[in-house]
Length: 129
Image (cartoon, rainbow, N blue to C red):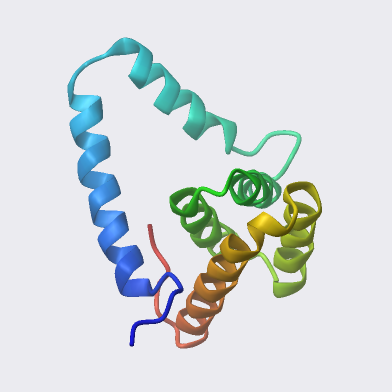
């Protein structure tokens, strides 16, 4: 029986799919799409807020919006940015308060992936997008 959570091999498949499809979408040369992708990337750069804080904000917004692909992306980025377990759960608490109980299944997936990523990190393995 397969677990309901987002397993790292599933994330690897998602990562490859995301990369392939982003290349396909951007290869069309559509200026509006290219500008939006660039704007999205730039929003998470260091500014008045740290990259880590912005990734936590992205995680909260993605959880409230119930986008599992976005949640997975931001969980990985949070781990890469050194988010602690305490910071991670505080952010998810905000998402739960804002989004309500309907976000609980998404919160579970986020925690499952976070735990798996942290285990990889403890083993000295890279956690990559």
